[in-house]
Image 1 (cartoon, rainbow, N blue to C red):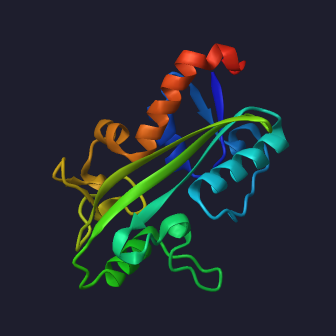
Image 2: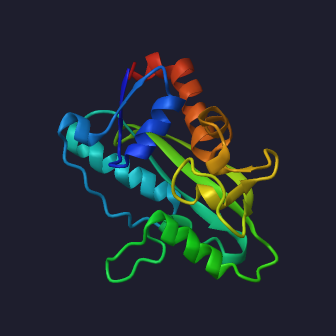
Length: 201
């Protein structure tokens, strides 16, 4: 089935297509639908619901939406829901490298470098029916970037059980271990078990 993903981020589209490979993942741009959402929620869950509801209102189609970010223990959960806008000043955003460089700077001298990637993923059928899948991937922040894969904070997020950063994982490993991969797997299993009853397959 076709699933409309509430994002303009091509990296996310590619990741979700690999995770939900039994379905076709489309973005608003793919169907010529306008989509703009100011993320004003106070949690990942609120933001994913906000994005999904806005795109559903525009298209009238079932939507999937996620809000994801990096939560660092020593920074009281920052950058958290502001991960994509970390270090932004006067509407000028940093590059991905600029964001993780700032993160490493803010963690200088920190003994506790534990962190978690969080993904809140919603399947939005209509304004009265939606299902939320929230997952994490736990790790530690490195002192220097490692690896060239992935995007965002992946080069500085080390997963002890693998001995690699997120940026050093194969696509298969990342889709199995990542926060987005785990949430997507839960959604895939849910659709397989209940999709016909939802009227979306």
